[in-house]
Amino acid sequence: MTAKFHSIFLAMLCVLTLPLHAAKSPNFIIILADDLGYGDLGCYGHPTIKTPNLDRMAAEGMRFTDFYVAACVCTPSRAALMTGRLPIRSGMAGSHQHHVLMANSTGGLPENEITIAQALKTKGYATACIGKWHLGHEPQYLPTHRGFDYFYGLRYSNDMEPTAKIPRDASGREVQDPEWWNPTLLQNDKILEQPTDLSTLTERYTKEAVKFIEQNKKGPFFLYFPHTFPHVPLFANKKFQGKSLRGVYGDVVEEIDWSVGQILEALKKNHLTENTFVFFTSDNGPWLVKNQTGGSAGPLRDGKGSTWEGGMREPGIAWWPGKIKPGTVNHNIACSMDLFPTLCGWAGASIPTDRIMDGVDMSGLLFDTGPDLRQTMIYYYGSDFFAFRQGDYKAHFVTHTGYGKDPAVPHDPPLLFNLEKDPGERFNVAAEHPDIIANIRKEVEKYQANLVPGKPEY
Ligand code: MG
Image (cartoon, rainbow, N blue to C red; front, side, top):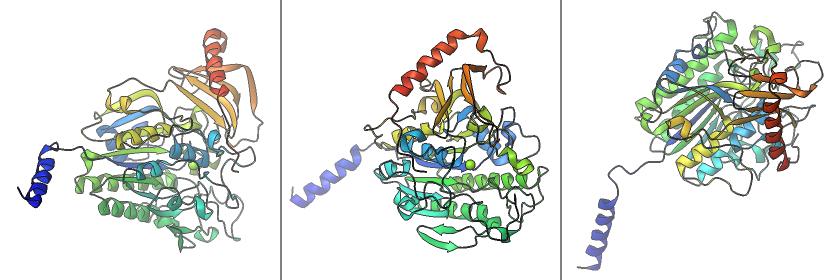
């Protein structure tokens, strides 16, 4: 056997000994709405907003009833999703002065934090962030410096670049004048458009997302798709204007639903459905003080800016045909921070061991193959601990109305609600369950004992 023939023979042997269907690394898509409430989708009971694509996604996949984000406003919620860690640990929790990064903030997600995108890059994933970032807008904090190959979107919220022509309280008006706003659209690190036409933004995000899927169909890829809407000011595309019975808020949500349909369609067209996990949620609850331009938390109490359930419990829909049993409704506690270890686990990417991770692998819940690793949920308001859920019970040690001017109210003993029987948190049962409160206190102490808050970024 010549040396050349020998090496060809060895190569053939290697090919033949590989499994016939070697497992391909799965693709991941996280779609994040902004300020969408728990009650704003058809499949979560909204009476008039039509969301056939999200309803179908839930019917073909799994709908969570107790899915949480880790904060009740944009920036800390996104920091937690990206890192799998509570925002208090990264310094991205905010203060009573500023709950989110503002246009004049100079901080951002610290460079020693590891994003999902950075973790997946180690396994050769193509990565894109299409939509609103809000984790720092100085150059070193932009998505392209935080593990994303591509960024197309706004650096922060759509109400953060007003013009001099803006009237007072303009952001929550149903009828908007584009002249009031001067938002900046970025492509990677470069300004693409200013002022940005907000009425075509969802459509353009969607086209970019579909293009990214098509360009990377050989995989593996990670698409992070954080929508700019339904955060106010609301702008819907002409095709959706005046179509919903719920007014402009409904128009905007129905356009996001259309966008979800386009993403699922692109996966079908490119034969990617069996190898792609899609997850839909929102960064925080509805902005209730915006009246008709704010969403609905359905049966839950309060909304954005509050640690009552309406601020942090969100729609959560998981979709992966062939892997997730269709039409499943899951009542276990799950959290946006759980996506980090779950996706990294499936990709074979290592999960950081030099820091505390708050997310837990949710594969067992999604595939119905293992135990629920999350039994608790912790609620922060800025950098302050407010509430704790263990199983069915939630104890409020401090409460605050979302965006209300009332001061925070401490409670000792804490207020206690059974969230399964009383999702609206109306009936305080603390007096009947001192044992449950004692248990929760122990859990909170255990948790606080090893907490090292990060240096505040804003
Ligand atoms: Mg938000």
